[in-house]
Image (tube, rainbow, N blue to C red):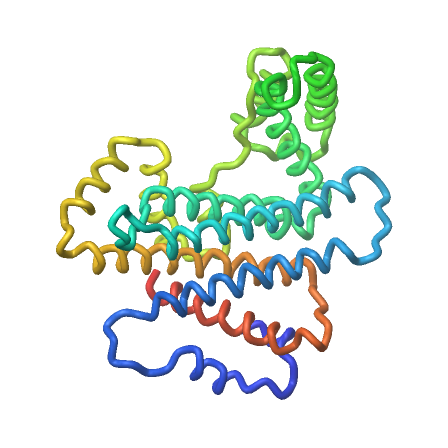
Length: 315
């Protein structure tokens, strides 16, 4: 547990006993786990709000991008978490029976995992090397703009001025990245891709490899890697998704039990990712929370530490 953030007078054992009472059931309480997931992601957003509201001197564009990107990634993470909770709870079929959209849920959880990994790459992975961090941000910005240019007319308007403005920014970013002292430390393939963008032979940049980032991150790699591969099948293979749906709907007598097990599998992943995201955020930010938040702080840190330890033991 991160003891640096624990306030004096907090009864950790009493809190955990209340949250995880002994019971005779064979499976954990799904509703309780969803509640914990909601609490962790909500508090993560509170921390991000506090971080962006602090008075800071922004010396250049990087400072602004650095702060706003952190808040945006966390904000999107929380929004998708809320939507996932709705899928876990509120969907019904035409007869009023509980319906679990496993495919959509897996795609959202995969998105949550990728959001954390992007955050980890931009912040925690290089926090002690500001030069490398700035290079990662430039590549992140470049990758985003290249995608944006493809759809600028459809997203913004038929006016080409917006697209040309982005193209100018892309040209500047490519120049800055090539001139960066850390450029030669990048993988050769990535260096070649950036050179191809400069010459007009490539219109995208894939600078994030999520499978490799899982191994680099503090997440339990074996467990999370297996999930990422599985959930990617939903995102990229409609046949896999359809086959899974057929198997689920074809077992109506076991429907409720199967749905509960599928939900438990996903919430287990969500708790691991959101817990690590929260702890990574407060570690990087060196978050100083007010005394009026001490109860919530202790509870969320306790839950995050508990779930990460649990997943680690089952990795």
